Image 1 (tube, one colour):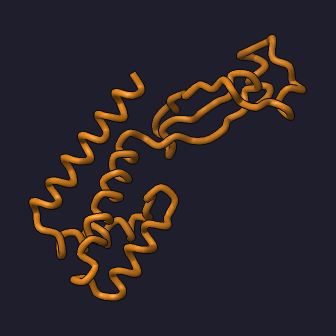
Image 2: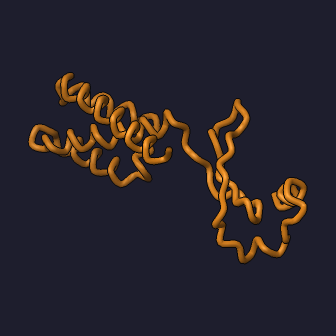
Length: 137
């Protein structure tokens, strides 16, 4: 990685990576097909800092958060195992669910939430996404 960074930026100090605070970063899309969408790279030392989620993954996580909140609001109608499952979903990293958990969440939503509440959740997710995109501009 450092060699690649030196090729891209010949003025880079190879000793800087140990002390770099990664103040200047750049997000780069990854060529597809790939499991990852994009990565964040430090412009100063060339180190890859993290992978970035796709816009679709961000939207799904936001929608999950909204639907989980709505399910929890009606906790009295849920069975104990359903409440426990939803609590576990809350504690996953940024609502990033495993495929089986995503399927189960969608099943619980279909079983317990009226269609208009789900529709409201989708509209809320879309408006929140627009707001967050407006802040970046």
